[in-house]
Length: 441
Image 1 (tube, rainbow, N blue to C red):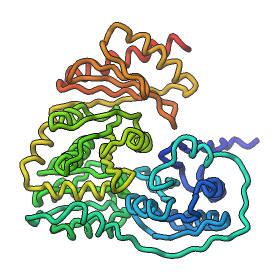
Image 2: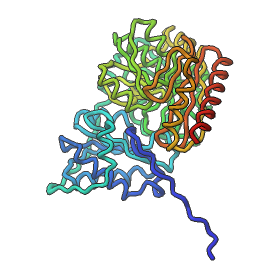
Image 3: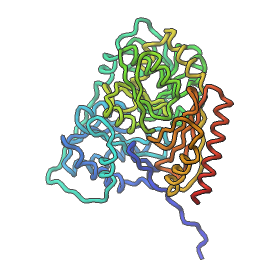
Image 4: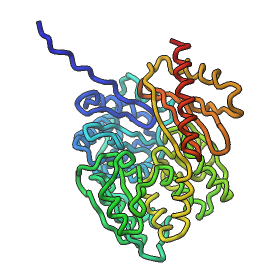
């Protein structure tokens, strides 16, 4: 009798933000072919830009995806290794794009991020990509290698900096290598770059302590760390790593300088960011959590900028309909040396956001949230249900309970200007989630 246990392969993570999995495990070339063949009918102009980050599996997945698209009559324009913001920018020009990345996930992971008319797919379009179907084309597409004018176009938007700030950059072995330093230097910065190739630093700068950059930032005006595909940015200032909400707030501050007034924020973004916008004459609308949801709300409500605090994801739809860590770095560099940078860091730092999660089967999530909302009745004056259940405790405090779209977990986030109060709010919400769970089991 064979006592060897069967190896369990976890399911792919699928959401409108993209498809992610472990290459060779749940993400196979067969799956890449299927999703790309399904994507092809959504490409109206029959042209698609493609590029990949620095993951070991990037090139083979890119070649497979190229073959799948060409077999469906799509002309493919290959950027090779390129950051996500660059591919999105070119995808706007060509009509469609495909990014081979799994963003901040570990190196064995990879995935597909789809671009339609310069934006990510909506829920209806994404359902078409996931469908099991057969399509064919009599025409075979062509392939061409292209380059991008991203650096020049971003520099034109930002403008030249009057002084010459010293910027430390932690590339993290990612795809921002040839773009982020070039942009910062073009607008007038002096750059010191570390971790140009694969390093011990993790792929997600929001989770990594970034010890090298922390030390280097003490000798420079400001430090920036990127993830593998260049859409996430972490700011390090005076030897201290800043929160993702600080990155977003700094990008928004520059937007306000440029005259933008209407912003969209995901509902889990720090209240400090919203207060800063309102205090400076701006308006705020809210969206579900997730880059694609923020962009969808931006387009529907004609917002000029915004993003989601949890990923430090600043979005400027005029330039790019995705999180753009590289453009954000340029925006922040343009303000470096001004008092406003320290003021924003201090203001956002007054608020404390806590995040936890509970392991709960996905089929129970909706019922638990329904019960949780009922159990909150009478406890808070204002409840928001655009994504899970968010209770506004007071002007400086809130709690949000929402389901994961990809995992068997429920997320619980709380924020307050008082750390002890944030802890107490989170504790009470967790207890209510447990009570709701008991009621539906």
